[in-house]
Amino acid sequence: MADESTRNGQPAAVSIAPVTRIRPRPLSPNIQLYRPQLTSVLSIANRITGVISSLGAVGLVAWLAAAASGEPAWSGFRNAVVSLPGQLVLAGFTYAFFLHLCAGIRHLVWDTVHGFELRMIYISGWAVVFASVLLTALAWAIGLLAIA
Amino acid sequence: MALIPLSLWFVASLIAHSRSSYGELIAWLKTPATVILMVLLLIASFHHTATGVRVIIEDYVHSSWRFAFVVSLQLVSLALAAAGILSVLKIAFTG
Image (cartoon, rainbow over all chains, first blue to last red):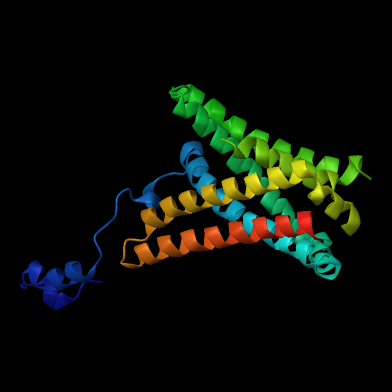
């Protein structure tokens, strides 16, 4: 509800000017205005999974350091990984890795100036989605079943 | 690009060694091929991490913190890669 005193008689600029000065200028593009599309979702997913994979690389160093410092430290690390929360984190790292890998290969194809037609963008995009899910499932299926 | 074969080798190796004992794992980590590939994996991974996260920092941090964040990122990446390589070499030559 607008204040009566500002609505009647007062010039609008007097009350609005201080507000516009403290409000930060909008950044472009206004991401919250866009409807999510496969292209934009995959673009940000590639970044997010890259950051998650970086954390996975930190885990790799922790694992190597634990192995290097002796069996007790390694056993502690292993027990954490084989626990249910540990397995869920590992599954998350696996999916993040495969999505980032597939999206990265898609970028390498783009680097050769191929596949920029809108149709091909969507075909390769869905290929990344399905391949990352399939590879994650395959890796865990082999890990859990084949090597029993 | 080197990360594609290196990371796939690493994931396949982890699956293969998912039920290995400590002794079996150390024996595998001591083989020359594993040492070389693991060191290359660490270098390539943390180089990729440092360049990738740097772009993200430069896209989202507009304050004067940007320079400090980028330098910290590079130092941490270097330290982690060095720690990983040192661990691999320690296992290879002593452990």
